[in-house]
Image (cartoon, rainbow, N blue to C red; front, side):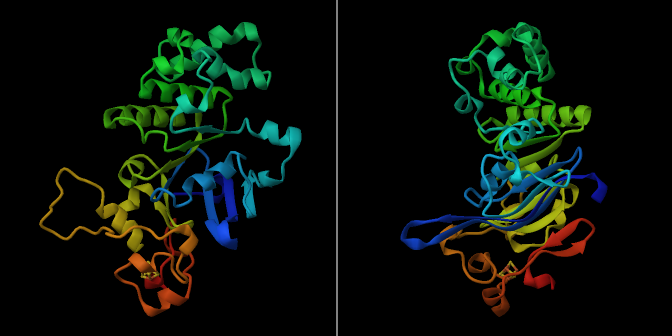
Length: 318
Ligand code: SF4
């Protein structure tokens, strides 16, 4: 299903370690290896605080890893500086959870969506009106919204503006950080439909960060499951029910389903994840895993291929 020649962005051995109080180290990302394919969506799922957003910030050059490479068409964008770094930002854009928090509230929507185009001199100021209307219509908003302010719009409308701004520069990749988490379920659905429609039309690659595996599996081509800064499983979205890692299975067991049978045991995790400052040696999931073995407490498992486009990091499958 996934072809190596379609890889446009690749994380290789990416780690991010923060210094913490008392000389301790917080490992937010540990040796992450992931590939993003042209025109496909990679959904990155895991609990809050697991390191998903830290990782995605590298892709849009908002932060640098402590070690590792982020290759865009084979070139390490972490080494870019100055004008080359600025120009590269056109290729990989981001949509945040709440656009109202991300943009100046005094800016009209026209200015919000046209700002990147003006910054890169892709339009003249005189072209702002027509451009804003065109972009707003692409995200299925009326062109008259150009005269509004973010605070006068609903959550779903604001997110459409965030998407309009992200697609303005015609990027190859869009990173969406919990972009639908704050929205009502019915609005989430319309935003996902919009994203998938734009992806089909423009062949955009999407990195979609989300804590809701049920939502991500509905449209992501590929899913990476992150736990305490480690990728523990990568598999095609359509095969999510074949998830093998105990953590993936627990996430799947926690997805509410209208036909859920509460008389049967539901695979879930009762306890909370340990602090990233206190990651256990061996498997990071061992304190919460009911299948933990002796080896799990001693040896850190690594991702191993278990099927087509399917990798798992767990001693059960070695
Ligand atoms: Fe559980 Fe061991 Fe697998 Fe970790 S490596 S998920 S502790 S079985």
